[in-house]
Amino acid sequence: MFRSSSRSPRPSESSRPTSPSSPKKYRLGMAGVANLFIRMRRFEDAALSNSRHEVMSSGEPQSHPGLAEACQDQGQASVELTDNFVCAGGVNVTTLLRATRTSLLERVEPLGANALLDEQWECKIAKPKPAHKGPYKVQVHYSACAARSPVADPHKPVNLDKAKNVPGLMTIIKRNED
Image 1 (cartoon, rainbow, N blue to C red):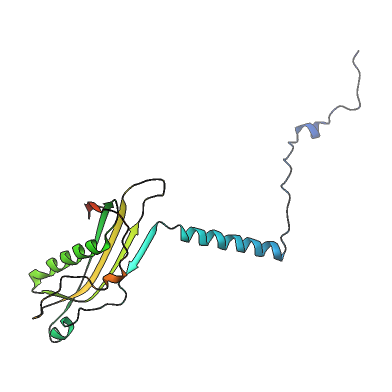
Image 2 (image 1 turned 90 degrees about the vertical axis):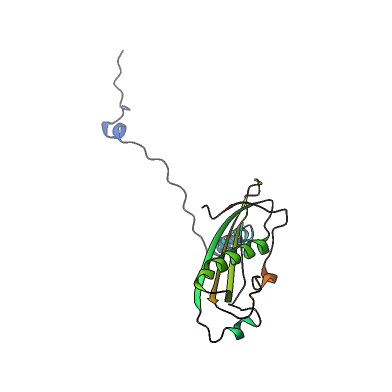
């Protein structure tokens, strides 16, 4: 009734776990490596073109005509201000630059300065995700030299032609509450 089988499992074989088969290894030739680099470059270009951030700048420091000549003998102090805005509907960069510049000028007036020289600004706009109609986050960094001038300050940022707006009716939801 009981048969003795010569096919009985050996104790060493039955206790050894079986390992899963290892993945196949592929050797990449020069063409395969080149194709990988081309794909990586395409993904990088696509990621940069779909960026939700836009940065614009006034360029090199610049003064309004007439102000620099009038303030040559006056002492100057370097000042800078960074404003953070949350806007809905669109972004009017010119309005935000004017607001930041006005705040900067108001901060230096108690020190006896009434004009800004060597002005420079940078504006960063973070757009909402494409699927959402959320707010825009805007950071305006404005730097200048404060001085006392006999010539009236124009109360206007420099190089406004470099400012690019986001179309729409802008509503400022928050300012400097980050």
